[in-house]
Image 1 (tube, rainbow, N blue to C red):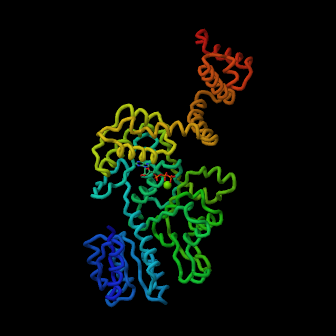
Image 2: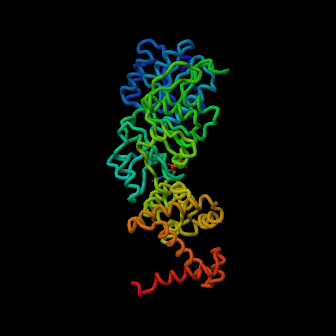
Image 3: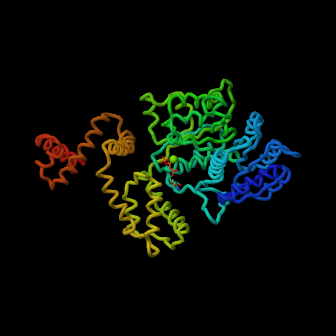
Length: 484
Ligand SMILES: Nc1ncnc2c1ncn2[C@@H]1O[C@H](COP(=O)(O)OP(=O)(O)OP(=O)(O)O)[C@@H](O)[C@H]1O
Ligand SMILES: [Mg+2]
């Protein structure tokens, strides 16, 4: 249950707000002045604070400064009377999350509170690295998140995360869907010097295009019909914090230019405004698109790409680090057996084997969901192949459905792995050497497939029988023990 602290000298408003939030299922505490509130905050933790601007004794800004001096992450919403919006924006510079103008509509109150509580959850969701020496807290309702996997490829990732987390530089995280980009972004935030400041995720693909600009950069009062008050955009709200820009490859070019300005100049302009506002945000961007290609094809600005790419982290797909599967399965078994209160702690050898041979197109997310499903379906305490039935058929289904583009991607992936090895053997005649390897493998497989029937194999390969014979001769010569 989220806990809200109300601070206002107006008892009527406190009464109204308390009832409003209690009805929505929140736990409410209230204070009539700033001093009491600061004491309460030092003794209890809250998920959201609503703070009046004008109060006798400590005013809103002074109270806010004291709260922030105690490294409290909880978002604070400043409440102010109409006409004081400039002061409220000033308060945001001191670390307030947003502001509400009194008298406010219930709808607006709900929206702002809902947003702030979501940000609070994100900020407090700590992600630990595998070799973390920090004590990992246990909470009764939620396990802390941990990045699992000690494969060489993942160790390289942790090494870079360790090297750059505290440096105030932008980071670009790439990798297929489900490889853990968001998890890594949160780990970087948690290990950075900005960990007490906001962490605001923005999914560039999820916000409707006509709203993206105002969501990100805000707008001035009167910027368009219905813009009744100055709206602070997410980037400005994130001032001094970390902004996680997910699916950056989907950002419209006009906004890319504005983001570049944030990175280069540290400034933005609200929509409909003509003054520049200074912002200091660390950008962590993520995408599962091939940004190189997006740049080549003119959909992504090259200058922004270079700016973001200074530190880039590529998360390997699960099929390229199958040695992590064991630890991931154990981790998810542990989590889900606790979550669903079922004593499923083991996995049969054959089920694990199946995991190793599967290609995991949905990466760790798919594995996580597969283990979740298995725990739910399992009636004993061991997950067996039977609980993975869906997975089995899905594998075949995927192979059939896998479109040409995905297939080419997979072949490219594999080639990328082996080409450096071929190059390390010889740097001459690369083209013919590689083509020969591919051709030989194809011919061997086709012959196997057709029970050594050359007519069928030639047909399958789409080459003449003569060409097949010729190639087979070449193969036989290569395999001849006389040459060894
Ligand atoms: N190494 C890991 N250890 C533990 N859990 C992981 C790991 N990698 C990913 N996960 C889990 O897998 C799920 C997907 O991860 P995440 O959302 O970070 O992926 P993503 O790369 O951002 O995917 P998408 O491109 O689809 O947004 C999450 O539930 C996350 O906690
Ligand atoms: Mg993601």
